Length: 214
Length: 303
Picture 1: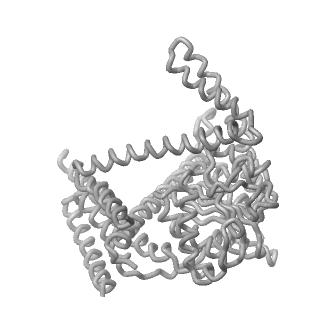
Picture 2: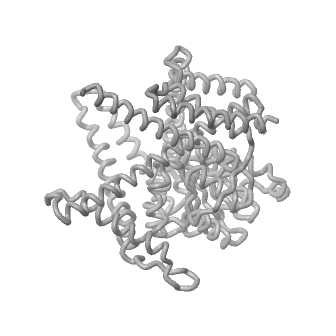
Picture 3: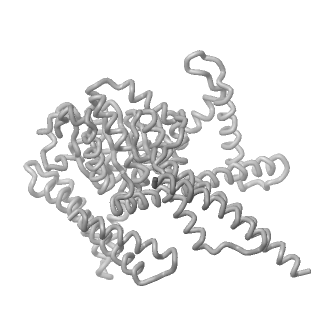
């Protein structure tokens, strides 16, 4: 049975790879199969984990039912009112709740984690010291300075209420260089990630399927 | 034998790249399928060589290792597996190495996932870790030494709710055993009862959410293993101390294997990744040369 599943996976992998040569029926079949299986998989996951495990077992069959789940279920059902144009506006209520709750939850978290803590770290550790000896760690201090310059110049670049001229313009220019380096690093990491996926597939083909790699 | 053939072929492929470079300068651009063939060869041949590269361990990985070393046997470690099979080549080696280390150090492992396939990946990682003779000899028992709580939908709301009570989000484990009947979880109410949290993440929800809704709200210590795509976004958190260590991509996994003295898949994959990156860099140079050559041609034609 395992051998059959390995063969199916190998044929599908090669089918998807065949697109690199040109579009073909095998690729299209593999793609359609992937879309279909993904849709079915997610449908089952949503049914089993949300409706059955979370709602049915939590609010209907549980010894101590959680009645709050009924509120969620009713609000969820209200989404379906979009199917009836006359009462479609009712679906805005659960949507409003989701938007409000998510925004409220994220607002505080985002501000604390991405603003306050980052600003604090940029300001407080300008001169880095060795944890053991207490001496100035020059390499780390240089890194901190680079971060400081990057943060300030990056912020200046995104300040559009003043024309980018003179010292202000030069600082903004430095900001764009930092942004370029950041995008380049991100692109490099993305290539690295995609190569890892390819390596994973090739490892599967050479190892699990053909048995060349041990 | 296979390894030697692969090395000879790699040398031939390398030399043929110089030929392509010369042809490009002469004004014959490379067809895109040729690029695909070279990338394919750059991945296949090093895998056949079955060699590992000498690798220095970076500070980010060392920090995580040092923190883990401070944990006592019996420490409870929550492991969030927030990834799926497509990200497994990068994250699975990290997970396997981490679990092997954790089981050898007698940590108690609580597994969960914010991605549906995460706990399944965890199960595979556990099965692989159990093949290690030292771990197999410990006769670890599910429910006492480790537990898989499975997947829970709700993304960041799950983390938020776990801050009050784990049981609210995970009333049963993946074997459908009630939370209160699992020996390992007897004194585990919320984050304050775990000693460390480790997150393997391929996107959202993942490390980003664990930092914002976990670390900064409930104050636990978090280490992370991320895909390379995601890793650059995590460095600010690492620097600010919101993360105790970071394993970024396959290189991070390979470094982690090295620091733990485990020979895993990431170490063997690294040579293939290095060859693939070198090929990409060479083709970037060739592409730029082709661009400038065609521009020069156009300018000359316009005159």
